[in-house]
Every structure is written in C-alpha cells, then in structure tokens.
Image (cartoon, rainbow over the protein chains, first blue to last red):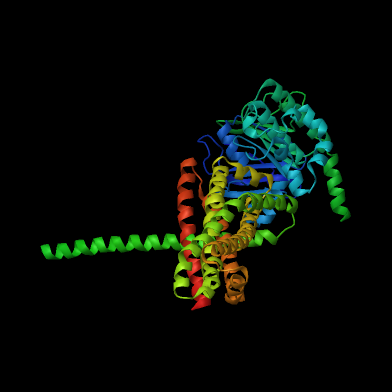
Length: 258
Length: 274
C-alpha cells in the first residue's frame, strides 16, 4: 500500500511549511494509510480528496498541532512542534489559518471584534485600521451589514464567511482547510474559490485542502491526491501546470547569500 | 476456620476502605497541585510577553467594570448593614459596661480585620467566580478555546490573565469601599442610637486601627482575589464534555473557594495575631 505523499530525502528541510513524518492519527479510520507521511512546500497548494469530514478534521487538527500524533513527527516550518515550548507553539500557530469542521466564533464578541481579533492581538492595530486595509475582502464576503451582530444572530452562510474572513485577515502563511465543512452554498463555494485564487496569486502561501466537496478546487492545486482503498494515489488534473521554480530559486539564493 | 474467614473478610474490607481513602487523598492533593500550577502559569503569563497587551488591558478593564464597578453598590449596601448590625448589637452592652470608647476597636476587629475581607470575597465569588466558571466552561464545551489556540492566542493570556488581575484589583477596591461604608454606617447609627459623636467615634477608631490591621486586611483580600480567580479558571477549564459538566464544576468550584477562603483567613489571622 502506498501511504506517502512525501519526498523523504527533503522531508525535514526548512523549505516546507508542513511535514507529517510517519504519523499515526489517534483515531484514524480503518482504511486510512498508516503511518502517513506528507510534505507541503512553502508555496505549494495540495489537494487531498476522498476523506470524509471526520477524517479531514483529524488530519487537519494534527497538522495544526491541536492534537498530538500517536506516533511520528509533525514539523511546522522545520520545527518539531511536539518538542516546542508553549510560546513557540503559539507563535507557529499564528502563521497558519485553520478552517475545519467545528471551528467557531467567540460568542461574546461581535462579528467585527471576532474577525479583527488576531490583528488587534498580534499587531496591536485598531479595528478601523484593519477594516480600512481589508475593506475589499469584507465587502466581497458581504459581511459589512453584520459587523455589529453576535455570532448567534448570524445566518449559517454568513457565519461560515465570517470564519473565512477571520482566517484571511490573519494573513496566514499556511492554510489548512476543509472547504466542504459548514454552509457550503453555491455562493459560498464561489467566494472561497475566488479567495483562494487571490491568495495563491498574491500572497503565495501554502494551502492544504481536504475533506469532501473539493470538485471546484483541483484547477488551483499544484498536486492532487485521492485516498482510495489502495492508499493515497496521485491524480493528474487536466490543464494543471507545474508550479513555478522561481520562488525556490529565490529562496536558495537568499540562503547562499547568508 | 470461620473465624479466620471473618478476620480475612474484615482485612479485605479495611484494605479496600484504606485504598479508597488513599486514592481520594491523592486526588485532592493532585487538585491542589493543579491549582497551584495554574496560579504560577497565570503569574508567568502576565509578564512573559508584551503580545496582545492592549487587548488584555481592555479585557481586564471589562472584568473590573463587571466585578468592581457594577457590584460596588451591592457591596456598599451590605457593608452599611454590617456597620449598623455591629453598632445595634454592641452599643447597648458597651453603654451598660461604660465602655463606649471600645466601639472603634470593635469596628476595626469586625469590619477591617475579619468580616470585611470575607464579605467581599463571598460577594465576588457569587458575582464573578461562578460567572467565570460558567463562561469558561461554556467556551471549552463549544470549542471556543480550541479556536483561540488555533488562532495562536494563548487562552491563559487572553482569558485567564484579565480575569485574574481584574478580580484581584476589584477585590481590593471593594474591600476599601466596604470598610469605609461600614465605618461610616456604624458612625451614623452610633450617633442615632447611642449619642456617640464624631470626635469620640473617630478617636476611638484611630486609636484602635494599626498598620498590622490594614496590612492583614489587604493581604487577605489580595489572596482571596487571586484564589477565587485561579480556582474559578481551573474549574471552568475542567468542564470538557458537555454543559452538564459545567453545572457540576460550578458547584464544586464554589464549595472549594469557600473552604479555601476559610483556610486562608484562619491561617493569616493565626500568623498575625497569635
């Protein structure tokens, strides 16, 4: 059984956002490849199909270090997070966005306070500054009329968009998401696709998408895999182009200069 | 043969009883150690990093407003009633024994040293301690704590530190307010019922009041405040499974806080006055 999406020789190098090295999930499904290895480059878009929501949540929680692997290592930007100090672990989580089943807004903050919380907390910016810089994104998501609402007052689709807005306002370097979780209306799917396309073109961070309902996203991905009974199978998507090498070359030239 | 069996049965029951007691003692010791560890982490988290300081400051102000400002009126009224009761119950006896000059000493002993800090602690426990257990418990159950962790925000800093310092500062403010109100209330009623006038009352109070009384009173409220916040946070964070667990943790936490208040009060009074 093929159970790896990794390039083992380079698995622990720092040019990876995420490395799952021979991990065993705490409650993995019976047909889940075990142990699992997976690497995600600094600017890579990876799609993992064929997982149900529960399995996707397990995998993403592990990648976001919310739960520890039974066995194996999880590396975020080259560091083994199981061995990281508490503050260090939180610093690494600041750089990622997690959008999986069960994500919630804080009930006693308004939508505006919720989505600007990371910016206010980490960068000590005011709400008005954050809104000014991201007005286009917030208008696109249609959140402006709901700024003063509390999460319990929101319709499901707006709640879902608010979660995505909070994640994008963090300006993450790595997105771990199951876009099929939550209120997946056609309009929401279209908006998420648009956000991810913009993110890929402008921010050029890494993205790992998994879970059900990924039909719209393969065109964005650098690599696509599907979980089947035989294990993880690489899928070639028609029209998919290989990722540009330029970012890697720039990275290596900066390393050499140092 | 039957005697041996009986002895063996008694031994078995005794063994079971002792092992249960031992396990229970171990659990209680573990609970106290957990609370002390949380107390240490809250102290460290308060100073370890400047990240998020304005947000934390705002949350602290919100906690002080909820506990100290909104609760101030109720504490003031309770302290006024306390001052009245002290005067109503003691003045007739003091007049009978011609000891009106001891009225200040009684107020200092009852209001500033003993009942004032405990009254304030009970009020803060009822108003804010239980509220913290319920609020944090609901946040744990509804996965809001996990959401904070994934945002890279340490829940201990974002939720714990503001509540810890907010409650401690509020306790101090409420204690000062309750002491002043109780003394003033005592004076008003003393003048009404016993014709003890301002000068005599004030002199009696100042003669009785020493620095150790103030220091012990302040030390008690600071420790009560830190203890109420730490134990409340501990029980809130422990509510992992469902909302029913939050209810259970709230009652357990409130009982433990009451016990610890009594223990701290007795310990400090014994150390300073015996």
